[in-house]
Image 1 (cartoon, rainbow, N blue to C red):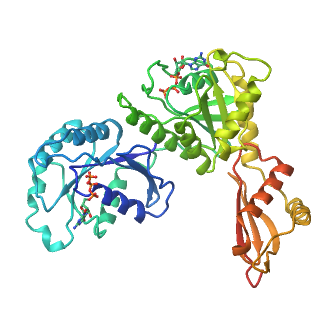
Image 2: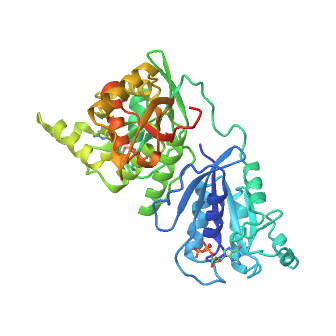
Image 3: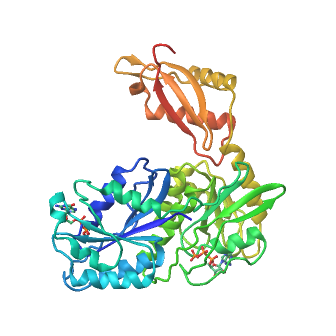
Length: 439
Ligand SMILES: Nc1nc2c(ncn2[C@@H]2O[C@H](COP(=O)(O)OP(=O)(O)OP(=O)(O)O)[C@@H](O)[C@H]2O)c(=O)[nH]1
Ligand SMILES: Nc1nc2c(ncn2[C@@H]2O[C@H](COP(=O)(O)OP(=O)(O)OP(=O)(O)O)[C@@H](O)[C@H]2O)c(=O)[nH]1
């Protein structure tokens, strides 16, 4: 499971500023899309080779400054429930307020690891007079200026000290890592059970109820696989936004470690924005994708039903045309084994290597059929098409000027690649680069 760090604190202490500072400062941005709910955002962060998810629990509700507001209480509950480490942010200008002490008491009792951070120390000389913050009994506070970035690096160092080397199990390259994602109640747990063939995971009727799951390795016809889950995200909440938030975070964290994502849809319900967002997470992180339409046993069918469903999915989830669609029932286990076969197939596609000669031939044929465009009197020249990587298959077009390499022509080449080589279930990355002098 991904290590989760939550920032809590009274309104206006600088939570969002710190969040943005950390997200902007870090070495590699994995996903910097704002989260889903109005009052929380999250991002994956990497610092000194260690990864964690940071959550800004910042509220929008203006509240009194000397009493703990409901909003702060909710943030704190959220953090205690689902974070591995809590950053408790205070404001040096306000000094230590009773509301801070109140939060500190709750946090201390939770026995969660906590880092006390005092913000808005823009000028180091301000540090004198801040000794009161040591009184909290939360260890040595870190004094930072989120606005100017001072000491934020030290804070990140302190954060990653809490992350063990072996937070995430490592698997052999040959193991196929599969994440089962989808909005609440579509049947993820049931599907995991059906795939594994035993009632190992606790299934519940209440949307968003929890199960403490772990990675489950298993073997299918000689192929090692592991179902990846994000344990520890306890979701006792009944608040709709919270449930949605958890389900996105869970998808994000599971997909991050997977080769292939099973995007589970509920056949008895319309495709919602939330389904789209979750599918988007898998697509944007460049994973192999299989669309699994579950609860097929509940659908009244005629000979056109599958066709209509597929059409609708292609319309609604247009950005993942490449993903195969399979209709199953976790309950009756109908076609569940087919998923395992599809996983193997998509993994082949996801790691597909095309030899040089075949790519040259494709480029020749494609450019003969539709000539590269001329833009403002300048003609695009394509010198080569080469594969530079897998997971997902990644290609580079070497051209005279990437400015001339229009999106639509890139799309055309991608379509040609798919036409000839399949690449079903996998995103394809196609980049342009300018020819260097010595090429
Ligand atoms: N001088 C100074 N101002 C800061 C610093 N960090 C944040 N601020 C300012 O403090 C104000 C509040 O910052 P936010 O990041 O919005 O605070 P927040 O805790 O997310 O606030 P809520 O969303 O209400 O919970 C803004 O005007 C920031 O520019 C800092 O290090 N120094
Ligand atoms: N009829 C039918 N019911 C199903 C099927 N799959 C799951 N269900 C039911 O749908 C409900 C939700 O299933 P879960 O497996 O808990 O769904 P989930 O996606 O894991 O839900 P969360 O843990 O809330 O995210 C349960 O009542 C299941 O019994 C199916 O294929 N057919």
